[in-house]
Length: 396
Ligand code: ADP
Image (cartoon, rainbow, N blue to C red; front, side, top):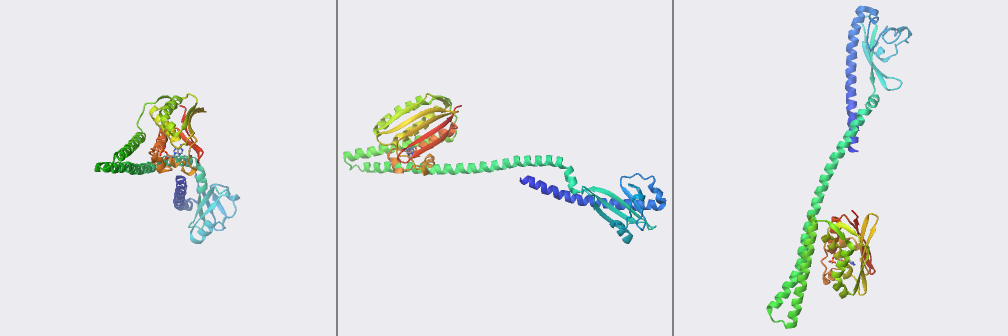
């Protein structure tokens, strides 16, 4: 749009300036011609008109306005010219010029008249296209230039906006990285402070056997928490760095059963029933990443469940996609939190998550894994009813 408007304005300006210039040139030319032809008519008389060959119209007019000779028409048929502006001016001042438009306004005629020594008036005229006609005649080349200008500006602006977007993307990544670093440090500091506190108390050596056992368990628990945190961070960085993994055909049903077996002790502890339903469907993907995704989803479905609840994995095919859903009958997630739970370190209930060994990175790993596989994620959840998270993989 900008280039189009600029082009139109500059075309009009250039046309205007050039038109002015050519008009003044034309007038000068007509003046010179009128002087030369006037001199010739004075010496040769009216016979000068008999063998003249010109594209321009030359007219000889008597002081009373009668047309004596004309190169473009029969002079006897022409009406009296006394009221023509250029003639009037020439009779008064010796020279006169005027411009008149044709009926269609597509052309205008510039007249130049000069009074000769014998009192007759010699008039020369030339036709000139109007700006509108010139523009109409130039429609085709102008259209080509417009097309070129629009294309060139589209390419240039695409490049500029890509550069701006790249800069913004780089800044965003930088911000996210520094946020991540500060979050990681904070998350690691909490268990480390506890470990250091318990170890310090053990160092004093005055605790009884029971307290020593308690402290040692706490140190063990906190270190386990740190280990899972570091493992999750490593997984996230692997996905962040866009490492190249070898894809293979992965049977989602078999994978779900394998994960359910792994999580059975935890599910038994929480009194949660496990179930895999659907079909044996394979997708081409990175087994390690899909395993992490499904593991985290199932782990959450158990962790945030209730006694006698259900955690269920379903595998289906729909149109050109393979759907992997993990459904639970647990505590659910409020509507306003549903997008945020996929952010790094975001937990709805921080204390609860920590108490059950959460790192706040599980769903972030799921999101990154989905991105890696060009899959989309949908979440449906109702507070106190349960959650249903679906990962939608493209079939190919
Ligand atoms: P965490 O390690 O804390 O489980 P996640 O990234 O896996 O971290 O999940 C983020 C938060 O989302 C959790 O802390 C929890 O509050 C909420 N959440 C995740 N899955 C579920 C679920 N199935 N039911 C209810 N809340 C969930």
